[in-house]
Image (cartoon, rainbow, N blue to C red; front, side, top):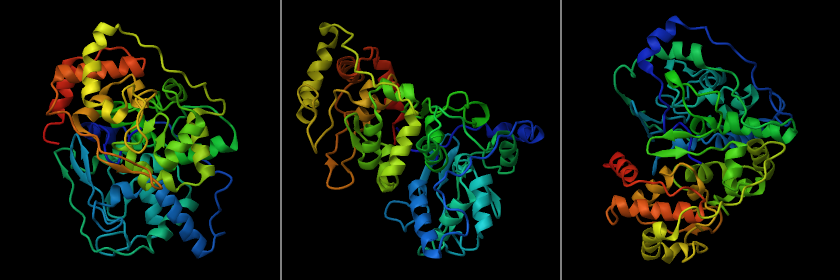
Amino acid sequence: MMRHACLTFARPALAALGAAVLLAGCGDRTEAIAPVADQAPRGQLSPAEQIARGRYLVRAADCAACHTAPQGAPLAGGVELASPFGKFYGTNITPDKDHGIGKWSADDFYKALHDGVAPDKHLYPAMPYTSYRGLSRADTDAMYAYLMQVKPAAVANRPHELQFPYNQRFALAGWNLLFLRNTLPDASTGISDAWQRGRYLSNALGHCAECHSPRASFGRLDLSKPLAGAALGRVAAPDITPAGLAARGWTGPDLQTFFATGIAPQGSAFGEMHPVVHLSSQYLNKGDLAAMATYLLGDQPPAPQAAKPVNADAAQLAPGRQHYLAVCAGCHGREGEGKPHVAVSMAGNSTVRNADPRNLIVSMLDGIEAQRFPGLEAMQDMPDFASRMSDDELAQLSNYLRATYGGQPADVTPAAVKALRAAGAGH
């Protein structure tokens, strides 16, 4: 699981958006997501209750991930959002009147989240209004009420650094007319109240599809493959459909634990998913966490699959085993059992069991920073091995881990490692 598209802007073919303007209106429209039963209607909350609800919703929407820079003022922007087209920078959404949204009305805020249009310009879909479009007006009003009472920060917005023609905002109007939809397709099936609530939390607030669904032409979400996983540069947002989760051993209770704490039997949140837990999902109540798990797996979740047996001979895996004992076993255990508060288990690890090996390879190349989780839990840093191990050695280690603990083919090649190493050079 990786963080949303705020950080890894999808690949819209903006060069073709001039043509998209001419074709505007050709796409069909669907009905908006109906508010779920426990959403309070507009006007029925006291001001204090509305602000409290807004604070909860802003966290559920993971706004801080893109709008709070490291060591920066809360929600004052400045987060660098890498993309194939250049760099975006998260904007100031404090109520500062010069640099933030202090002059916006509640209508302006709703239009930005619902239509991707700010009072003075079209927004790039690096801000996931394509998912936020599903938010109810009552909830956007609550979010606005909360944001209007946070401390204003006089921090100027950093201009985006985009290549031509991606810096031509006029084309976004055509893109919206062609591809902006009121609903996103569902990867699971259900009719229960929990499923409906989870749908709203996952599709609209949590905007999971922005990273976990592949992209089609013009950068739009591929609606035929909702939550089926997607490439995000060197890494991949994994398949979180019911079948994809079950194939890696996920259950409803494990998903709830993961969202609440960042750690489950399948491993810990790392990379882009760690901030999602740290800034957002850990603050959701138990009912909402259960609803998200229900939605992702469906009302009738598939049985979690046990890891497949080793599917390579010992001689083929022997070099990788030696590398594992030399550089991994000290933290992850001789037999991959892991060590509490130090390193996760390799046995049953979701990343090791993933059919796509990129995340495993990149984590070994780049390492993983020490991470704190809710409560007193923490995991030690994992050093990078880019300068310590060759492409051949890392391929052998990857194959040992995947075949031994993940039931995956031992088919990682040195060329695949080399390509990911080169793609990360200078990062």
